[in-house]
Length: 381
Image (cartoon, rainbow, N blue to C red; front, top):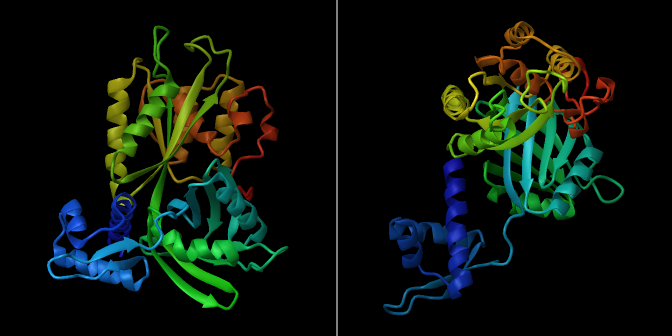
């Protein structure tokens, strides 16, 4: 079914482009553009006409082919991408929107609704939600009630299924837009009067946090730049969805550091069967591109940061920590380590993930003010 959704999205995009450019499209136009058999394109057009996504502009007349138009060339989905990563019984839902206003709307209402959502964050047009597998009630309705909420999240084999209840504009998004988002496999809808409920199906992807440090020298290079380059390199892989890149400042008075003693981490979502291949490519990339022989790379599977790992990250901001300490923490957290002395900062970088920029960039801030951490295993959610 995921392949069908992707093909539908691809064909509709091509049809919209022809409609905008020429005012119509024919079966031959789409067949030539996609190198798909005309009979198959005809089947797709018939289906899209039934779904009212495509309309007949002119019927076939003699040798003149039928002309079609997409029914709404001005409106494309505001939901650009929706995907999910898992860590035990926890799920992170990523919803990339075309509009900061829409993303802010969903952030507000999803937080107000509660349900199975334990934490909601927004990074520009990307909504990030942490949910526990299970069911949670939300009283959805018109103001002052929340207009939309996630009431259930469950795992079915390799898929994550989130149940969304909504009214008004969010209902339009659920019924007409979410199925068009990259990463969505299926959307199942039910209508209960004023309330619309739907199940949004996505792949259960593996969450990787990759920490990086000591890739530069006093003569050149920068760890943040190489980490960003690594993210861009891995994002080209079909099995990878990029999530983000961050810079963290460690103990600033370390005499051996090349400049300000900062490290970096990136986060990616990966098809579970491709994890080892992705890690292997990441190590090869850093080994080839690092200017320092002391480069270090750490890889953690999952997004939950335990108290022990967080404490190590915080400690590295205010004092000298050793490679032996980093190795011990990594072993206890099942973190894979590669490289040399830079593995200290690489592990610390992972320990600082989920923190606000005020903590990441200012090692003088008290660790007690680190309210941005997401550590469900210790109850901080």
